[in-house]
Length: 319
Image (cartoon, rainbow, N blue to C red):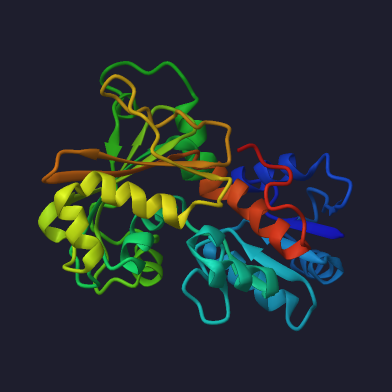
């Protein structure tokens, strides 16, 4: 099987290449440094591939689709360009059988955004179970390592020599205008009437992510399932997650706290995700932890590749 990574020099592309390098079922097709941005060379590589990863800025990913034209390659796009586009499978198989089957059978697969992965893992099962109404007005707080910001942000954080007055020395909130590129998929895939109020924060650690959705108990729906949640809401929500992810090797439900703390970097280097519910009986914290470059990017992309190839879903991954 011939695989081409368009944009392999970027952070996500390099991590995908690392996960594929030792595999015997794949032959990686690469372009030289002088050819990697040449449209004709890229078009030729896309045409020769069975599967192509697009690890590119959004505009370049759209260009790659046009370069392929009617070619036979399955495209797995790690950009935000096609996550809500018609005809593209959403690459989060744990969200349900329809998602997994669409990836298996599809020729166009969009890898979820990192923040969106945590938000959807937490909210989609509650929506399906009737625990969360479509018109819920949600909040989402997300703490991430700097590697999600690409080469320029990585270089800035790893330059060293920072002191207290350096703006990179403390966590930084961003997307202050509520226009983050992950918001459309967060709303659409969870089938919510409104996008969440989203507060992402980047801090001085390389890999890791902790996505939190806070809920008041009164926000839960009036379904039979919600009635049980009013008696013991934390247990009911955990039961919902366990039922949704019972057979999913890459999602662990009920991760314990760490003496009152939860580290955003706890799953660094892994391709799995941990979900837990904290808080009180009235104010609940739904929390997802994972590596922003693992289940939040390259690990998720390789998981989609495995489904496309009919390989074991965790092949080449580190749960």
